[in-house]
Image 1: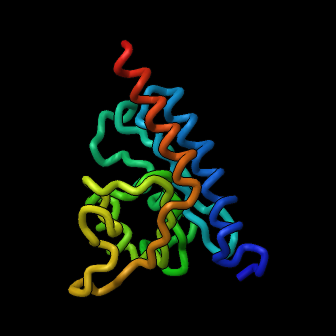
Image 2: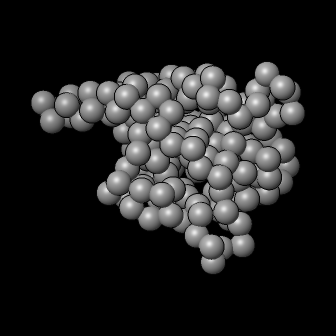
Length: 159
């Protein structure tokens, strides 16, 4: 692994800023502003914003699309060694996909105590009954992630 991209708070913030840029693009397109990137050995190998409305698909969450792109990039469904950065704590579907894909680590911004599944409402990523657990780091650039989502929904309510 490239030493300049080790799992440090500075590196986590750098990659979260990239995820925030993607979330902003999603917001501009009328999507809930969630951005995700998949990183392996310090390189982005997958990225996406939410595309639920554009694709008319409940499965088009940012994390799912970023992981799918990463799998295509490395030529394997196993995302061992991959860190997924996402602006909001993953839902049950995305957390489950991370476990099944054997993602090494998820780093998220905004915690979601109501429906987050990386330790918020549930802990799918760390459930001991699973064959794989995903290391979790939460709260990275949380305020920036919160502001982006709150501003988006403020605008939606005004319409």
